[in-house]
Length: 473
Ligand code: NAD
Image (cartoon, rainbow, N blue to C red; front, side, top):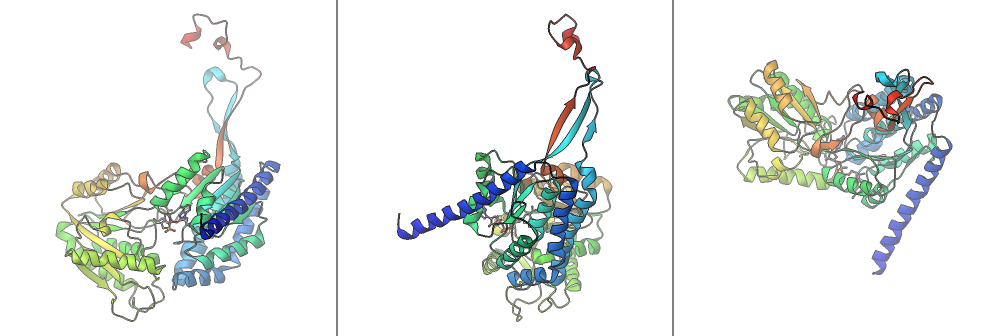
């Protein structure tokens, strides 16, 4: 082993040792207080709320600096409001969520009582991505704290200012035995994933999600995997095209397409293909009248992602696809602002149609009918989100029943994710498990079945010595 790799191994050892020390502290603290009271959990949620609320401006600034231009309103909506919403939703419902759920007891076990009792799991690990760096770290943390768990967070290295800010503001509100932030890159992530957490929630790419699942499996650590993929938007013959186009342009361009549930591509009826392209372009111009200069339009997060998106578009151009740009590629954009680029009928074989796009580039493809649209969706991996636009209830039900997607919004985009009463999660390659609201509380709890026998419950004829009647009960 050379000197450099020996030092790297030592660093790795250090990182792993530091993470394990925090984990041990949290495990010990959990052992001392395995069932935090409602008041304790509410105080934790208050602290989380304070950290976000009192640092709103610094959060906006840090994320904008990390992106080199993130729309202020998008940070307020997509990070601050959403996170505060999740915290407050959990705090208001804490008493109800913590209560045992009564279930019916089979006749021959009466008069015993059967209940499902939520039990804190212990120490929860959260690995977060860069695209909503605050929300995707703190919204699952709120659910875990509500469930009575201790929390360790590994934010993304691609948004370093936001990660450092989270470490600072959460460090001020929390003892690290309750909540700790471990800043670092892939190596820290890899060491983090090897910790024997009681639950590990990972948000990120499908490729890294596979590695996380492998590492967690060695410890039998249960995981929730919030992954990505290609989410389709299907426009039915019966759709109001202008309204569909507005929703698609909004869902695609929020955070410049760097949203896990952004519509990745559009399937439109062949006869309405050109009208769809024109309507989406028109809707984008209305949302961003000066897309080349407005600070409302977010930048692509890094040079690597910017180059990746440009290569995808160039490959489509070379393959003969028609390209419609909203904004000008030649304008003096601030750094890394990509014009909104619609790619009409690209071939299925190019990267644009094989990989998650995660940027302001939108393929629009023609389909012959609803069955064709369904077949196209089903030819790919199961998507995280599916959007369906139209008024015909029968076709809508057919599309929803014959496709398997993590979640659905009908006649809109993103909305099913932006609420705490619906569970949020993927299926197949787009993820497993769910959180948000009560689903999050249950994910981070052991929903423990408890049967309490009554003095009168005898089990009757189920005990030996058995009789002929025993088997017929
Ligand atoms: P990523 O998978 O590259 O990284 C996510 C996190 O994992 C980061 O903190 C990173 O440091 C860490 N990491 C990277 N390699 C690791 C390894 N080998 N071991 C352990 N940790 C490792 O994802 P990203 O680029 O940050 O985010 C974009 C992806 O996330 C997209 O695919 C997007 O669809 C997906 N996403 C999903 C959701 C969802 O809720 N389902 C939300 C946002 C983003």
